Length: 343
Image (cartoon, rainbow, N blue to C red; front, top):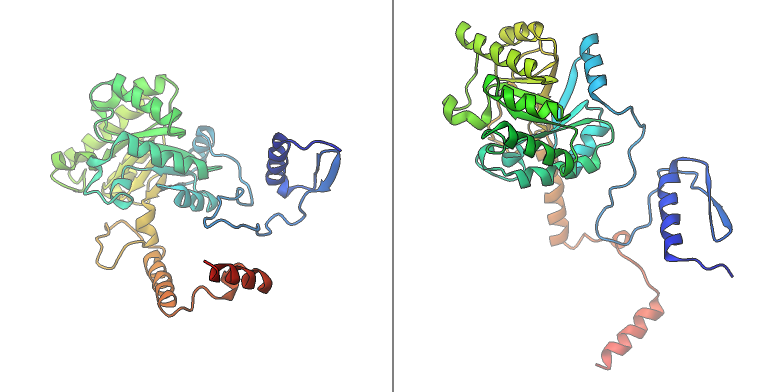
């Protein structure tokens, strides 16, 4: 009789998982079974949590710097969205987003902080890893938090390396234009792709007098352009341009040779980015939403309805119903009851 070792069991499980979408066969202990013919049959599970599952179909080609540059050359808008955990990244990737940004906005939308200045590098790395586990095709950007890159180019490079090695992202974003050009150059020279965030830079809201539109005057617009050109010259592969008048943003976009991703910067940019929580409508009534946000769903209302229904069914003992429970035989139950009576 062939000996089936624990290693053999693990190999079998791995082949079952990876081979669920093919007609290949696998062998264990000299016996052969055909791979599952139905790739999306639900698994029989006894645990109280849901496993991540296999990658969603249909698979798509991985987004790289090369493909992003190709989109830009062809005039194809680049679609970017934020994500802060496994579920939000998984749906964004499955929906075909080109870039997923693990933005420091997670300080507020995922951690309940007052603003982005509170979030730490360790917080960001945790969320970056969660997003990376879910993402199969999109290009992942990690946002360097306040205090992790401003002191010197060396500090910026050290943090960027941590984001690549520990956060498992493909590139980083940092706030700043001309004053951050040496840091951008240092990071790019180390082989790490960089997006420079200019215009309204939330980490510097106190210096800007709050969340105010930038570039509204000719002088202000020229400063934004100078920041963009400096970041481009330093090696940024793209610019994130926030809260700038549409006409100004369009002129800046045409002046640059790299993509300009807008957020509150009009339709003339090379692409757009939104905070996922905002565009999904995953917030309670009365929550402030910036003017540039379009709400594509109402996740809060649907979640509220579902959770409220669950609470009501628990209170009225409608849940769990028979189909939500695990069975055993009547004989075993009676035997158990008799043993309990003896206690």
